[in-house]
Amino acid sequence: MIIAMPTKSGILLVIASLAAAGSAVMNVGFSSAMIASLLGAVTLSCFLMAQFSLHGITISRGRSRDAVCGELMELPLVAVNRTYLYRMPLVATEKLPFCRGKKFDVVIPALAPKSSCRTERPVIPLKRGHFTLNSIFLTGGDPCGLFRKTARFSIPAYVTVTPKIQPLEHLHLRNDHRSGNDQDGRALGHAGTGMDFFGVRPYHPGDEMRAIHWKSSAAKGCIMVKEFEATTVDRIMLLLDSNEKNTGYDDIESNFEYLINTAASITDYLSRKYCALTFFTTSRESGILRENGDAAGIRLRIMEILTDLLPSDTPVEELVADAMENFPDGAVVYVLTMSASRELSDLLNLMETQGYSVRWIFAPKEHFPPCEPDEPRRMTVMQPELKKGDVKPLAASYRKDPAQLLRDENVLEEE
Image 1 (tube, rainbow, N blue to C red):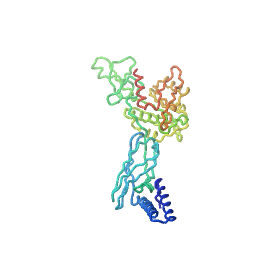
Image 2 (image 1 turned 135 degrees about the horizontal axis):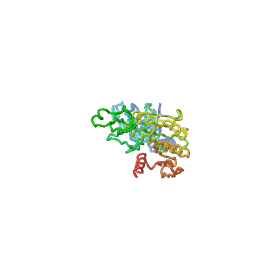
Image 3 (image 1 turned 30 degrees about the horizontal axis):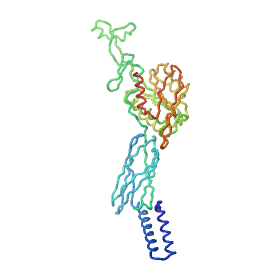
């Protein structure tokens, strides 16, 4: 049985009651007896009200949805008063591992007899992942706040918090600038060696006889040949560094979490752009992970990986070297790293010489200082050592979200 316990004020009242009772015994008199009786009655009545404050109260969870980091979500609770008595406001407390404080309190309003109350509990999750919730603690007390009683309710629930997605305005997707996009974002075709008919043109020496379009040739009085549409699907490679050695200090606003959000934002953008996407990262349990296919089709699988991904012990240079063996011709490569080295720069330069278009986002942990209460964040600027002709990184920091960072890249390209 759970016994109501005194608060700080209640402890003082209990001590005063005991002292008054002792004084009344030692110095028998009407005044001392009345004071002792009054304090004792107040103490006993407050204790009994607190002891039965949770009697007949049940609590359950309302329906909730999966959440996104940094966006408001609701974890509703439904409290029911099954008695014929009024109940004072209660406090519901639950440990929420995806919040910075990891504990959340909410006040449940006073309950009329045989009534119920739904409390929405709006929270902002700051950590991604799959979480299991179980215990909710309900606390009641007396009107004077001298005693309180807390009961534990076991109500399992499961919450998934996915990485934050920044709406991106534009990404560099094309390595071959001969083609553009239509108003729906679909790539426009150009002549090449594909399988879909593109049009006809005059014959040039070297054209195959089987390509002659006889009907057009007869109509124009000269030899015309058929052209076929070249493959116009944009091919994007997305590489995400997860090396634990270079992960930052704060478990919520670290450079690793920043790159997770950047990868999620890029994936979400590409899923609406009719392109092929190959995603590479590393996991401590599974080594190098690879997802390949139509960006819209593999979006959910990549988001699941990003939701659960933890730092690994694989160097980014090993990830990049392994991924390069699977690059298609003319791909655009986004490389998201937490470190920079001569070996990494050499690999990125090799990509450029092989005809790939490389976009390097560099997020060192020094650019993401820890969040200290009542203290400003002080960032140490880190610049990788580059030689002439090296691929230049786009430096990320806590001061710019991924959308701003990639917007700056587009401005630099236009200039």
